[in-house]
Image (cartoon, rainbow, N blue to C red):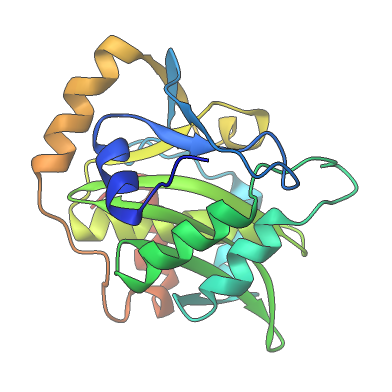
Length: 216
């Protein structure tokens, strides 16, 4: 079994490649480079009227990097609508190491002191690579994504890579880019500088919505 270190993983992302497993039970990892890449727009991110209302109600408390381990484990769980997950033990260990290195972050939705939704992803330069999300309450992962986009816009990020297009994220205006067109965008973002830890942002929901929808 080929050894993959966190450093190798970061180099792979910088080349437009990322690992996946066939299932949580399969110990093997496979390098993936999609012919068409899913990208979530940082400018022109679409938020439905109902989701805006949910964000404004402050139903969920948003926390950053306080429960990374729990987030990735929740993303790996099977659900009623998801029989197979691609997060195996090697994926879990690698991304946990990246988190400890400060290169991988979680955005978490909490309700009554319980973690009920969230997402995690890898950060390099001004690029953020979304990996997976989960939700145990209606809109919990969607609200986390809204806060992520606001945080990336506030910090000067240039790219939010979703890897693949799918119906769940299509509602936010996600689009696809052919591999040849993706690489110049990736390289520019990797050369850029951005700040992920924007202090006090998540408590100001109107600023969050403004940053998520308008990028400014």
